[in-house]
Image (tube, rainbow, N blue to C red; front, top):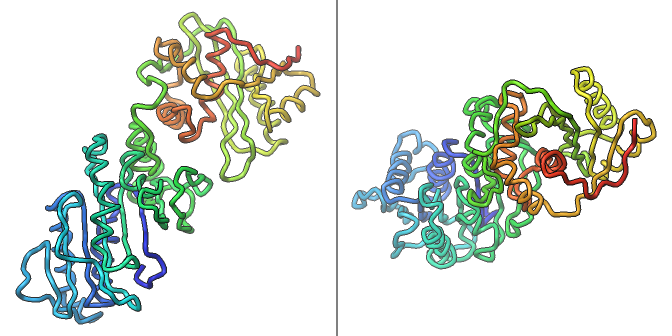
Length: 436
């Protein structure tokens, strides 16, 4: 932005990851070092925080070490923390995002050099995220007050924030609220370079980075600590993964799930599988689950999850079947969605003739299937493992599942198939079965 290559930048990252120090205090101070006559407007969710950030910038510029980079001097007649000027003609105005910004503009009419910027940091308080009126008030300012405070359209705007709601300020920008395309640096707490950029973010242009998969800042949050964060699925998805979902829109009542530590005697068991369309980095996982039917309901006994090409997927399915039999379980069969890689798995195992495999045609959409499964969950008839290694990821997926495409659903699909057959008695859509 300082070089003029980007004029609209959105950065989304978790709370507590030094975003204010880096993208507000240090960025603005660096801007004054490049051009002491630059003019900045800084907006955040409260006047107190805006003044505090402004005072940090002013104090940084006044350090003797800063003068070794560039000689910028603060006018002695501007002592206010939220509004001050430099002797070189520049200045700073810091205000709450929802308050008036008058009598000052970011930048000035010289398009050949960097002249300043509008820097917006967390314009909405977390407590206000669920207020439609407060979200709308902040979002409206993007299309009138904020842009009217630029000396010209080429003056950069930087927005840095944690996601709080699907319709928060970042969501407003990414969905075309201002009609502008925003270069978007998206940094979730857990980097997954295979994750797809959401299609609904039509006005976002992803900024590439070379960060490795895994924790964004391991010293801040290790993988184990990230697993703990997943306990609050909404906060984790929104503030930490930058993928907010409607807390009111999740289909399953998590209080309805039962969590087992010991397994009962089973009347019968069965396997259910959901296979990925492809095995590339950006695709879903393949999942195979073993379920047991008991007097109180159905129990998820075991599962295996990964990204496998066809031969490895077949070997994994055979090994999982053998593991179940070695554990004393004798599944009635293996149910697999008859689609894409699932069709290939059905055909390859069918030729061997030693596993009763059944293809499933899922003719109803995920939302409808989720609605059908919800009463069985709410009534406490679905038991999940309390302490399996993969339990946190399963819990997270179930909490954010809305049937409309939010997040992965590879573990939810076979769970719903198990409910359909083992509780609801649905066998509609089976394509063929192979006997032992």
